[in-house]
Length: 140
Image (cartoon, rainbow, N blue to C red; front, top):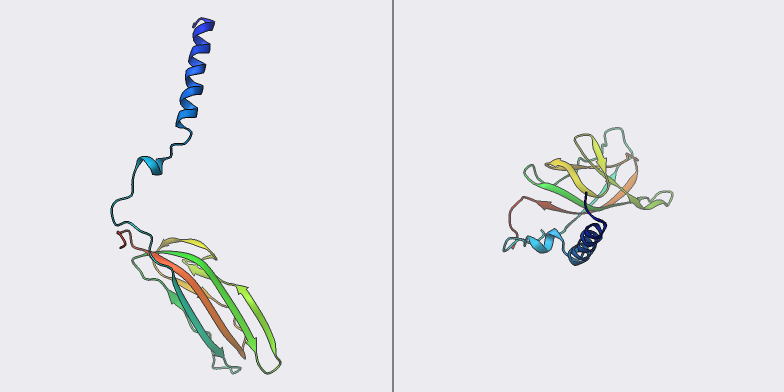
């Protein structure tokens, strides 16, 4: 057993050390390798009309590539039907990878993703997707 005075000394030392280390983070201790920057954001626009016929189908819109990690910032979809002037502005969309739907952040696995759309015949689709791809290497 420690005498009471030593317990207080030990507690005092721990308080001083913890306040001294409070400002340190792992990022400050381990610097990034030279030339390591975030990849640029990519903005893709997809505009099309889904005709009101039995033969029309939604296009399959694939984003990214098979050997990169996909990071999604946003998906915005605007749908307009010109005959009756009905519109659905700024629908927050989803992308799908391996059956998992998400609307922001990193994909669950490496590889491309597919834009998920609701089929509404006779509508004009205006889709905007902002994303970036990480391949694990340095970016300059």
